[in-house]
Amino acid sequence: GNFEEFDNSYGEANLVIKECKNKTYLNQDIEKVGFKSCYLPKCTISCNKGKCANINVCDCSETHFKGLYCNEYYEVKKGKWSNIFLKSLSYILMVITIIFMVGIFMNRNDPKVKAASYNFLLIILVGILFNIIYLLLLTYDDNSVILCTVEYLLKNLGFSLVYGSIFVKTLRIYIIFTRQNHSIFIKNSTLYIMVYMISMYHVVTVILFILLKKIQVKPKYTINEERYTVCSYPIWRKISVLFNLSLLFIDLSISYANRHVKKNFKESLTIPVYVYVVLLILMEFISVDYGEKQYIFNACMVIIDSVVILYFIFIKKYFKIFIGKNNEIGINTSLITSKELIGSS
Image 1 (cartoon, rainbow, N blue to C red):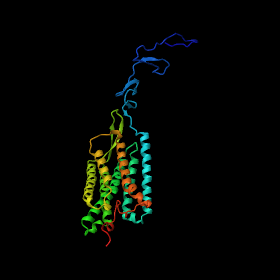
Image 2: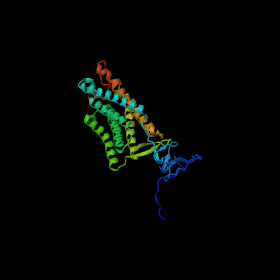
Image 3: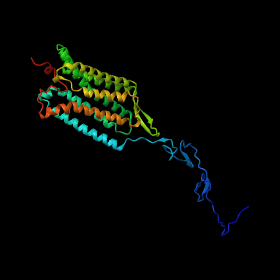
């Protein structure tokens, strides 16, 4: 029936809500009404390798994962100090390379620099700059298709300009001393075209990769189930590596054929070629997965290659030229003109 309200209509009782004795239960104000209650944690969505810690709350502290449901990988970040070291060394190499470029350009009319075909020396230095920029890109944490494309292009253009120039120089010496009547093959324009064709092979390859969408970024995981990404290229990349390696072996073979050329004309670039061949084989053909540290090995390859080239082509040979203490005729350089090799009549 009907109820009538009357004053002081309240009651009072002393209640004690005890905490849960079972540790598997939680004791919290789950309803947000001021009273705690005992309940079991329940998650409607699986916590994967984590454990359910509350109502739809996962505890990932004992796993290698993160996220609301312990299903997200931690991202591997490149080491701070290793990146600082690589960047610092890159800038140092870049400054040294630019200094050599300026020095060669300013002394381009010097007979000794002319004998060295300073244009090809500049091409080699531009190739080293490409390698240094590639080294800087290796320090980036996040890979992308664009970054992978630029890295591939810079690495192979650097190779083409440096070792393409070394190759045509070696070939020119061979032709001069074996077929002097065929001087048309040793004109600078012919040599430029050869370096250009080597470079264009890699440019066209990259264009095809882009058009066919063959360059991808794929995830990989460490033994601790941390995630990192790598650049993935089509199988044709191996063909390009073999192309580069073949060019180097041909260069070494021609250098061996030139071994009887008198001392003043000896090729002094075999050591950089040998070093690059060894590094290339180690990185490309030995089945070792360096995992998330792969970029460090790639960076070391670029650093060693660049330092060896700078030392044997410029620091060792041209330091004496620039300070005027070389008493030789000055044609024992990295690139020698055909007129000086044959001799004036």
